[in-house]
Length: 243
Image (cartoon, rainbow, N blue to C red; front, side, top):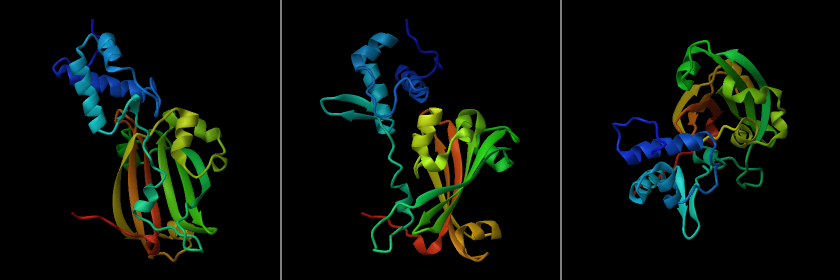
């Protein structure tokens, strides 16, 4: 008997795809870990190997899984370490590319404003955690970030010393809260900075800044984080290769 409980109107491979994504999001397998063989999954879910292979093919195409020749199929771990460098050029005094340091300014539980609630799929006034931090290069702020998280999923962060954990938040989410960011959607805009963020960036109000709005999700597509990062315009760059 099949163990699937999804929409029976969908093709079997699609039902399996959806079920596997839920299993991954619920940490049955961790990022970087191999999933069972196609034969083992076919036996577990009472499906043909061909149906299982088709579901796996879809997840590979979507970037959730990756096949490694001679080793098996693994949960792909997204690489967010270099995401900042898509839009900003951060260089040290010697001209070498540098990762800005992180400084947490505040972390507090709040009721979600309407825009935050909508982005995270919460009811207006739902409980969230807001993190305000700056990113610094040579001790000077180059980014000011406001980060919103569903409190129910990220409660342990309120008791953690995040500055001691390193400059990247996503590994902290995974280690302390069991929440894995699988992918994110980003929107790029520009604005005249307000007084509050101008002080954080140490620039006059109304100075031009670049704004990156990011909505991060888990493997099942559930929103985990909504953030707005404001950066000095002089660090901004845009590069695209057209063939």
